[in-house]
Image (tube, rainbow, N blue to C red; front, top):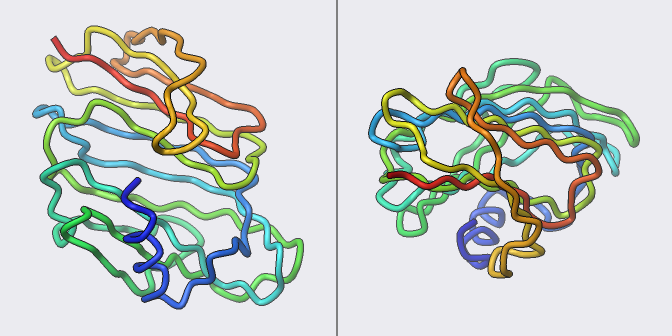
Length: 199
């Protein structure tokens, strides 16, 4: 993820408090890489729970790969949300987007929603990570590769923070559908991810 300062600046522009008012109960992501080995598209399905009352939006942060033009990144709401305000930092390849619910949630209420981010402007992608500030009940990440551009090796890892060394590194097989996945029960706080090596 981009520098903490850049992320905080974007959150400040959206008047978003730094403490989480929503915690993720479960999250599933499908990441698609294009024929140039670029991160082309990701689709996210989340279930969140309100830890404060009167919460009506979730802020998603997108970190593009080197060379990404965040002004060309598209965010599409797919289910139970709409796009609100969007802020970007071109130098840091960061995008912050509000996903607005149909009404404010009350304390303890849950909200499922789904959205898609389409990019394709960045350079070669070699990993995908997801950071969690609070424990998440279940997380699933699936990465799909576009033939004939397939990696020679995939592996999963965890990190305590963005700059910490990788832990729990284990190889992950690429299946017959040209995808690799990881699943974590009670993930976080910290970072989980998949990385791959090209020939």
